[in-house]
Image (cartoon, rainbow, N blue to C red):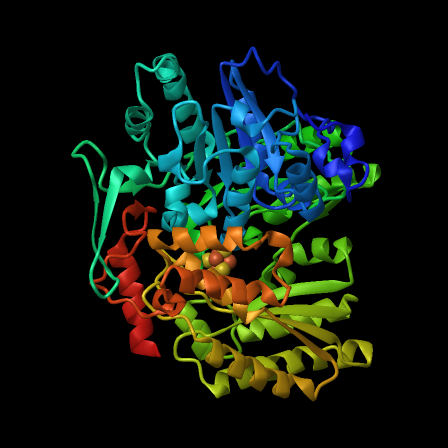
Length: 586
Ligand code: SF4
């Protein structure tokens, strides 16, 4: 077992220490079911993930169940583990992951998949599900990426599709009932997995067979046995007020990315942006009651001492009583010097009841997401964004003392032309100029420009993603357009990362070999900006005789998509209807 002295030579050893305020250390040997819960990125990122905190609390609240955390080791820690012949361990009792019954990963970003394999490898757990015997933990996946689990399906014994707060306890209860038979050898792993697949929302990839045609398209995707469900229904909690929220909020020793209380006030989004996969992930729309929010805020503050509470949700300005709840909490916490932050505010919030409250929060930067530069593009993506309201809101914000603005844009929207890119630079320049009247000079405007990825389960899923050449040409064009205005600072998302995310998120199970090759070539979360990163991925595709461009192609409405077997609660016909509207518009 690694001890504190082993950690003296590495960066930020507190990432690996555990023992934080409010973490839970149970008796390892006394637990009937031992669950290791992890995130394939560093501690600072993983501990900023609300899902990890919720599941940790849900499982540790179960009698006889123990849940301990693990996160991806940074390069120096990986080296230490490998050179010392150690194994990947949990934070709480520092036990090898291979000592647990289940090892679960929250999957939030496709480019972290090689890190999942690295963690399994460091744990001494065979990478492929089919190579694991009865003494090896079950490997589970969940989180946003599980909306298309196929690219990593060979590495996981099972997935939970959708929200795990209720599905995971059901799964663990069933496992507990059958574990004696399983551990004594009376029930084999395959039969156990088949039983676990009866829990709604559980997907066991090995129970399904995929047949590909000579052109690489899927010809059939079907269960191997008649008792296995043809579609897997995404799980969601019906009532946020009754669902678990972590009151014993872990306070890390090291500064994490979101180092504050994150208080989820809603799940789902009332808007219908056609490119948005998060909406489908968190569908349907649910609100937490104001009274519950106030009660949680008071308790979380008492249990942590944090001086910032951030409201969380996909579109919090659409929460019906947002100004009342925010005003109430601000009043309550003012004397304690606790601030309430409201991220991702819509422009209209600056014109309504919220405006006076927002003005009291901070007066430096503001962020808006017009997504596109012209109304035509916004109509195509169904973005609820009114230019007039936006201009009025920005002017009001400048008059109230705000100094600069950040704008989020997408390029690569179907039907996009140079005029639409011109719209991005023109709108940004206008936003800058709007400050001249109240403050005497233009504002600095930061543009964050991402490339649209037509994601699974969205109405755009059938569209192709743009090629590298097209992305680079558009980025170069936009750089020229905004380059002449020194007030505009544009940052473009790396096209290589966008393309890889596009390929993997739209991929099928044949990508397993590519992801394993990427892991074996040394790809990790912390080396994506190295020169050889792209070359290694391309070699991995070549080694598997797969063309990455195949996964970015246009799909036909008749195609069987790798993720079609997942029912997110939005019918494929409804998506197709929206898709057809875009086709008619572009
Ligand atoms: S407002 Fe945001 S979360 Fe809601 S659908 Fe649009 S992009 Fe998605």
